[in-house]
Every structure is written in structure tokens, then in C-alpha cells.
Length: 201
Image (cartoon, rainbow, N blue to C red; front, side, top):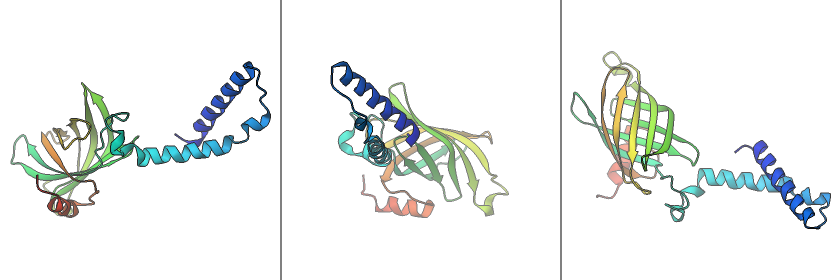
């Protein structure tokens, strides 16, 4: 939440509280509103901390926060409808209010154009529209393309994601991921290193 609507919200809250006090016969001097700026600043900092980090604390899950924490690097398998399975890594960057995804194979990388995490039929669904860019050496046979992915999230502390993808090249397939690290890999090589360092099982 930006500072302007937060200021309005605090101002309305303070005005309502002042009316309640006045209605009960308590005097309400103008100095009552003096700390308004400090309150807004404090709430702004608290909201920023909540959005970036606090909401991920384990003690807050699954209640009062039901939204699963997907932030990290996931190792997976991409199984095209017409081909052999391929190794793939998924990196999820997540705050309480936003989610972004990147994927890496040894031949290409993708980044989400838009992504959402919503509750569907009792489970959460991570859905994204992405742009895939193959390595330059491969672009003669594999062009830049766009696609979409939908991954089902099971439970408040998910260890795996399953779903499917489809592209504007009329290809589709299945995806399966397992979390290997809370760290965020930057490419296929660093993701593979995190996977090798992950505890077995």
C-alpha cells in the first residue's frame, strides 16, 4: 500500500476514534492529530517489512497466513507431449503481494510476463504467462516464443509442484518440480549447483 491511501486510512481511523471519544464526553484537542505523520511512517515501514519478509515466518503458517511460500529454486522435469523428458529449474521470486517466475534449461531461459498465485478448488494454483528465449546458437531451430504454465500447489508448506504448459508454437507438456533451496539461482549452472548441494531425499 502506498503512503497516500495509508494516510487517508489512518486519518479516517483517527477521525472516527475522535468522534467516539467526543460522543462519550471526552475532550479531543487538535494535538490529538499531531502524531499522525509518525503513525503513517511507522505503518508504512511495517507494511514493507510484512510484504518482503515477515509474512514468510514459519510460525504464521498455515494460520493466519494461508498463502504458501514458494520463494526459492526448484528442480524439475519437463515432459513434452511428443518428446523425451528434459531437466528444468524453476526460480520463484515472491513477496506477499507479488510473484515472479524464471525457468532454466541447458538450452533456454524463460521469465514471466505476468504471474499470479490464487486459490482454486481448495488448493493454490501458480499461473504465469512467460517469454522463452533459447540460446543464440539454437535460435535457428528454436525461436523465441511465449507460453503459459499452471502449477498446482499442495499444502501450506509445499515440497513439490505439478502442472502443465503450452506455447504459441503449438507445443504442450507436463511439469513436475521439487524444491531444492530457498536461495534464488540466476541461471542453469547456479541452479544445478544448488540442487547438488541439497540434502538427499
